Image (cartoon, rainbow, N blue to C red):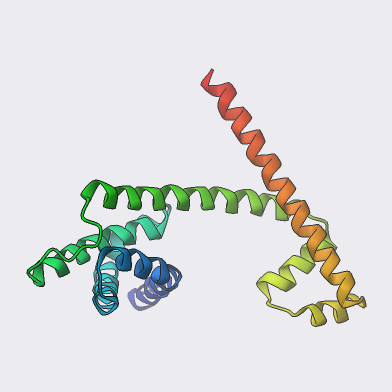
Length: 186
């Protein structure tokens, strides 16, 4: 892979992660700054800083908490440029706590995604194909019903049953992991 291809891959990965996180960044910055236009400007500055530092990002960790730390620094810089304390939230410890909570949530979501993937792999072919068609390939209920030679109602019911199976499976795996964690701590 040449340097140009590597740069394109890096750029594509950055764009994907940033676009997924942009709304969270904006909400976070809106909680810091009183004016929406200031928040918009800070998110744009944050995007530039994130891109400039993206090679330092550890892809095994969640992107959003990493990005929120940049947003906090850019919001502080913005407030200093304005020559006033323009934070809505003034408490530094609280600001750090928000970032830490986001990181904990992201780690929890990643754990659930891993469990969900395990559960998806255990599904029989028909329900698995239904889930893949509906969520990954964005097929409509009508398209799925036509492919399955079934009614819309039957497809809805099968999706509902499959979602419940997945939820039960994820919860069972979570309980098993908690039990294993408790017994290893003893």
